[in-house]
Length: 599
Image (cartoon, rainbow, N blue to C red; front, side):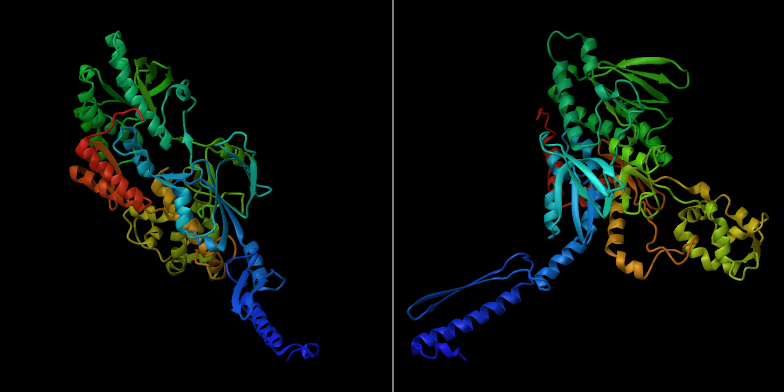
């Protein structure tokens, strides 16, 4: 009903006022219906209707009043825990891809705005694969998540564990002010830097192969070495020096680069530089007694024999003591003699070291005497409740069985008899196998069929029960099977995926723990500890031959293994874009050869 004051108005005017009242009511209802949408701040409802005598425009602007759906949505956003991720390598990207980003406020900081498929870096050094073919922009990955993830191309220069804050600096513009980020959870996945072991001249005169930029630099240097070698006026000794390529380190990276470089020279460069084809020399220096020490002995032997056939010189038990711009000096361990050899390019690939930011962080939390950041089996940094570390920058400090042997015995001895029966031991064995993976490795290596075989007496006879001293004796050698995980892409990727799953199920597992029993304390651990699953590893050896160590102690070598390598590495690319580019690069190389231009 209209107000009494309007009863005297013209009937046509009253009719229009009724329409305006109805329209205003509709706008209010529409505004309320849309206020809970994903647009937080304002909703503009614009209705234009043609009425007799002209147009009518109704405007309504919804406000985030206390208690309104929009206000509640904003409160929910603020309740999200802030996760700051440092690094976009294998560990960081695996964590980011599997994390339920709708449950967290995610912020990513990395000095590179791309993810690089690092196992193919040796192929980039020789043009077998182009650099862009193995790089996926981080913002492409973020876009596919359909979530609000913030990314900054910057480097973390300091971590303040006491204040839950990370200080960052842009590596693009030096004039850009430093900034800081607060966090509820910090994920450190910054990788590692090359370990020079303090050898003089390495930083100034050697190439490294950790980043995509390193591979591009090596590619240009190889071309430069050949171009300099054919310049007129050089002596033969100078030409030989320019064409002597030295690799320090006989691990997978060094071996694969040597194989790629040999193929590049034999298949492409000697055809372009025929006058110096007999002067080229490749030398691989290894401090140990064999190359590829982390592989099966059969693979190591096969690689050494193939390199010998290819003319790649392998010098074992030699330690480099100095590197100058023209010579590399090494000490032969067996004789103690010191000798020098000339070089045109030196690749240093001898392991990884800790980055300065991580060293400073380790000093803060009492790990300053360690060589690498230590985490527990759940990847949480020791002495930090809300900081996790993944990949090459950290190592898991697996707890020893003997440190908890008394509490394990007490937990299993339910009747407090002072002895442990086989049945009581079987009640806790599942928790022991999950909590201490070295027990399972020990059983496998000793070819024991059942865990209860550990309780047998020295003569191998089964015992019905053991006391605490007998229990300690039974498990005394288990901890000898503890091994550090290798600094590989496979380990880092599995750690990232594992931690993301834990974050996704944090509340669920808090209410319903799925981990093993707490032998020190009550209840169970919220999550199962991280367990690395080895899916094998490859070693391309050139000449379309490769060696592979596959699950189940299988070893494969030869041409068929190279095709397996192609299929696995193509399938493991981070996107269909990079997958297509890598396969097309391999096809191009088969048809047209490698590109030797200095670009």
